[in-house]
Amino acid sequence: MGSTQATAVQTTGRHYLSEVTETLVERSPNQQLLPLTATVNQKEHLEIGGCDVVELVQQFGSPLYILDEVTLRSACRQYRDAFARYYPGESQVLYASKAWNCLAVCAIVASEGLGIDIVSGGELYTALQAGVSPTKLYLHGNNKSYEELQLAVESGCTIVVDNWHELKTLAAIAGEMPTQHPKPDTQNPIRIMLRLTPGIECHTHDYIRTGSIDSKFGFGLDQLDAAFKFISQQSSLAFVGLHAHIGSQIFELEPHHDLGAVMVQWLSKAAQYGLPIQELDIGGGLGIRYTESDDPPSIEAWVKVVSESIAAACNAQNIPLPKLLSEPGRSLIGSACVTAYTVGGQKTIPGIRTYVTVDGGMSDNPRPITYQSVYRAVVANRMLAPLTETVAIAGKHCESGDIVIQEAALPTTQPGDLLVVMATGAYNYSMASNYNRIPRPAAVLVKEGDANIILQRETYQDLVRQDCLPERLNTSPA
Image 1 (cartoon, rainbow, N blue to C red):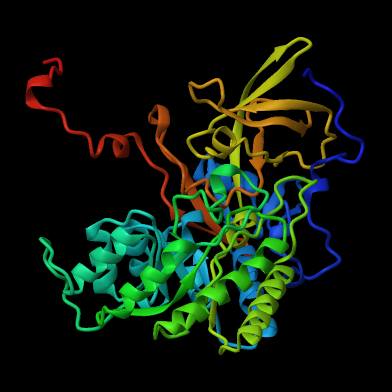
Image 2: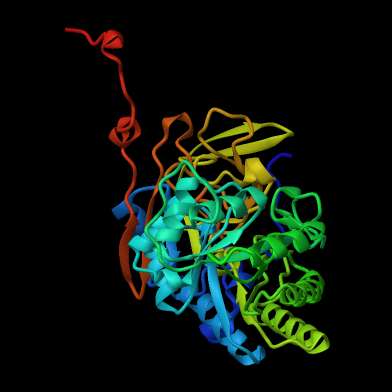
């Protein structure tokens, strides 16, 4: 499509700012396109966390992840406080750190009282290095290595068991079964939960739908009786509850309401095998707003539905309320971050489209090429300029599919303009790569006018740091 007049409603970049009629804490971050602190300053520049985005790029370079601390903390508090308000029993919010796992993010969510959901030895190690208590760490994953399980056992975190192979491996680690590996130094039973596949469908991308029967994750419902019996015979395995997760970027509340009844039914069944009813983890999955047409439920609405469904199901089954765990990831951090790029050139194909190029792309945000995800953008150094055309934002990688946004309503851009893509906190840095040997961007944490590096920009030297060149291949000129 060629350059066309942008819609009348989107007159300038200010269109994307949140309404200012509510206080920051009252707004649900997952329903915002930009971080809660986003505003336009007197220079007509985008400002986040009291920091001028233009000045941030001048200081730290681009591409640049800009994480707003206020928005992240607000989302943590809304989840935490909503569960305290709506669930009559004990609750614990866990941050699904696969969305963005680094020292600073782990430290922030832990300081707000959240635990952390981890899915690898690397995420576990990072959370421990950030000072997170092992008692608030839950290790997931469908193919945990022996070394990862060993590290989890030694650190004392809870292991969410995904399949029979893993269950038997843990029994071996604990000494109940023979093993060729060295046993970890532990005197206490290993805390485990079982992940089940509830068979609940939801409307989301096939790649991020995890609760249906046809999924690589979890025990099928037909396997649970045998698993309960096996665990009841292992004195070294301390069963604490059940886990399920039905998918990601979900806008419907009904699937999560239905999940409660299924989970409580099987928790009641576990009790018949002498296994305690202690914890129930209903996963996460609440979606966020990536475009104007997206309309996700608020954090409070999601928590209310989940809490009431679990409480009602427990009452119907006449069992005590378990400790209720949840694992939000995207809805905690997605809207808290933006990515700033520097605009390069343009290519106009008459009657078809105009490409505007930026200095990043699929290596710092692989979601558009992987999931066909849609984003919105603004020109941060000219926020009040009229939106006059619709263009494709092209990344710099050697792939035709490296398109950050297929149709972006923007003012006429110039080389050196700063393009800010919104809602890039979830699965951008965490899925970033060095494709085409491009160094990964830096990330800064902003709050009240202060900006701190939380991820250093990679260098060319970093790219070859792990490379090894055999002597016979060393043909450097004399």
